[in-house]
Length: 104
Image (tube, rainbow, N blue to C red; front, side, top):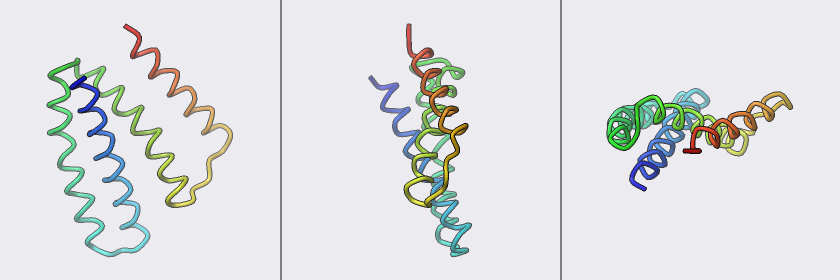
């Protein structure tokens, strides 16, 4: 249970960092960049804590896959970014990969 809370926290911080970074790119207002950097600095700490409950390889795979899905959804809804059919299929493959990794 602790592992999934750390992964959830890691994904939330990752999505926030990248979303804030994208906002900075659009607006060029420095405070978005500073906020993004704060969130980016939190990720190694949370990642290290998550590796207490699973190997670093599995932790990283689950984090990257989950964050990729959540960041894509964030970009679609917040920044109105377009998704091609190939990208949607790729997200489906990532979801299948997550399920396979989680099967014990």
